[in-house]
Image (cartoon, rainbow, N blue to C red; front, side, top):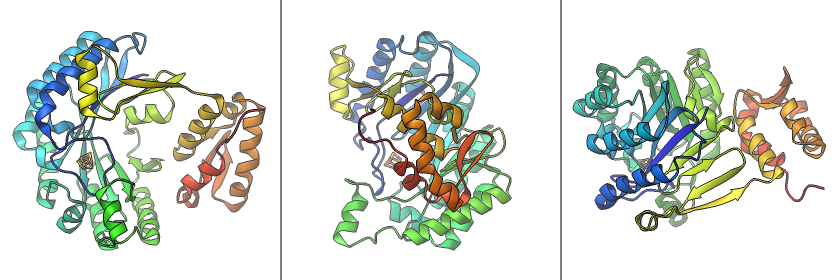
Length: 379
Ligand code: SF4
């Protein structure tokens, strides 16, 4: 079932590790909302009139939108699209934006039924190191207030592998999330992305490089703790109680169509991908002129195969034998030969017609996927 993504490209301050598209200048927020309304109009036919199963406000920091801005966006979305009555409607939010009043307004006066909260850590030392705008006290308070406002569908982002995140911090972060009864967690290993402040600090020697061993054993601890608590590890970075998978993100991983609006947003219609310009000023100028600022690429069979392998191996659903065969003999044969050493080593397994990574294999997910990527032409 198709989904709609809205990219809100503003943040209060830049987290040192982040390479998403955002601006810390909020002056153009009203103009950006106006441009989003226009893009929604111009792209109304992209999903062929299909009913929306999910709506996702991501960023950036969508919780910087005020009530009036959200109201106008929802009004437009419901005017242009049929939305399933049980649609998952997620807003990404930072703890420092979620005071009681905002939470009440979101719950009682908007269709938002799920919050994705960027907690990252419950320790001030980690949060300062990451240059997050919130404190540990904000992180704890917003969980309590979200529950009091009636939000039951919460997911938290947590980061492991940072130099200040000791094993004790990491274990405590997971313990707190579990004790709060959070049904879904997204946990990311810290990576040093080009162009970020962190990359600059590492180059200058003022921050240490990511310690691979620390990240690996914190990931292993995470897998054990979540399994013991009854969560399913359904995507490499995502854990959910049974039946509480993120429906919007799962639709990406399962190759379903979606429309993305806003600067840097991507869209997929099953045949081609398109992506909007990653620049707020250029995005605004284009929409003010009534134009859509995107590039499009029709996916080749090799690109479709590679995407399937990459997303399939990262998920509980794995890569289906039948789907691989449907890509054609060269691809299916290449995959079968490439996965063999991993089956023998016990880092991948084949059962019920699907190839999946084992627990040990999940540590090597990117390497295994890249070994199975098709490079070059199809003969
Ligand atoms: S991590 Fe989130 S809040 Fe921090 S800069 Fe990136 S998008 Fe903004």
